[in-house]
Image 1 (cartoon, rainbow, N blue to C red):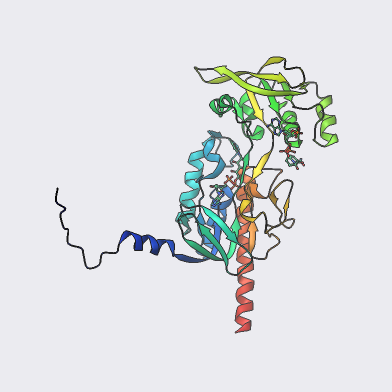
Image 2 (cartoon, rainbow, N blue to C red):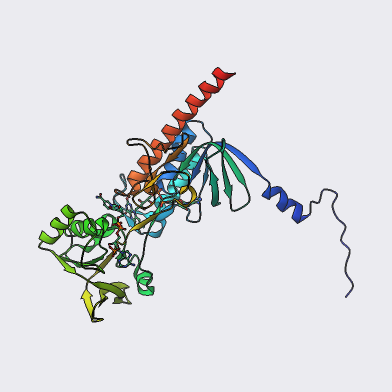
Length: 342
Ligand code: FAD
Ligand code: NAP
């Protein structure tokens, strides 16, 4: 078949050149917010209302961790709200105040030069006078297919969030650090009984926490065991037990429970800054006490990225507010300095 010749518009730009134009795009902003969880969106609301025209880059999980949960019952002002709905409202709020919300992922960040330089997956380069890091943290999971299947239906990584749903029921917690011990103790407020499964015969949690744990009448330890499977019903989907294997003998035990809490640590998303900022407690970005200031002036961190203790939506939002106020103050002082230098 013969080819058909199509006339080319005079203003036609070949796709390769158009891509080139996109690839080369550089955007400057006074405040770049990285992350779209409660910390990022709250920072965006405050920064926008301070007329700083912030740009917020959402990352691969727009709305953050709350988009993977259902009921949230501890967000002030809402006795019940679905996590994803709450995050849609936060995004709308940030946009309505004038923040620019961009669907993209920051793949590199250079905090050694000013303005700071952030490169996004789309090819856009952002330069910023101030940066608010709000990239959150992710709970670590065991990686079992059955764990994935029952997530949100009996399997959880947040006792504060989901403990309430297991009133009068049996619960199993896995882990041996402070989080696991804290969660086990906290869950006794709801559960009829809590079994803490740990893969070794000593905990790494603080001694004082261990004392409380061992003395608690509702808690039993299952030492030297690993969880190999989460067992449950199909209709309605729900957990009935976890299968645990003795790592010394290989013997298998099914521990009955309605709730299975995985507390084997959290991984803060500090990859972008791990070689540029001091970190603590296994990767959380260090901030000055009582503020969101990091070791680099003009760089602020908020939410789960910096907080290994509270890790809540409301505390993250609070820190997002603080970060925007800290950034505003920093930029105002910088403006005064620049004017004086002129
Ligand atoms: P996150 O919500 O973790 O958001 C981080 C954001 O950063 C994401 O948008 C991600 O896309 C973005 N990001 C990461 N890297 C990049 C990058 N390189 N470039 C651009 N963006 C990036 N808390 C409560 O208070 N109540 C609850 O009921 C509750 N339930 C929960 C249920 C579950 C299943 C989970 C996992 C957590 C729950 N939490 C709850 C905890 C709460 O979700 C977190 O404390 C809160 O979301 C932390 O907010 P954040 O803004 O710090 O970070
Ligand atoms: P962590 O200290 O890293 O402990 C993780 C625990 O999970 C360890 O006991 C580990 O076992 C176990 N584990 C890891 N992977 C596992 C797997 N695949 N299967 C089974 N078990 C596994 O994490 P964390 O408890 O979340 O604490 C993180 C940081 O926050 C720590 O610095 C902690 O002190 C801090 N924190 C402080 C407080 C507080 O001050 N109140 C509260 C919570 C957390 P092993 O021991 O065998 O490695």
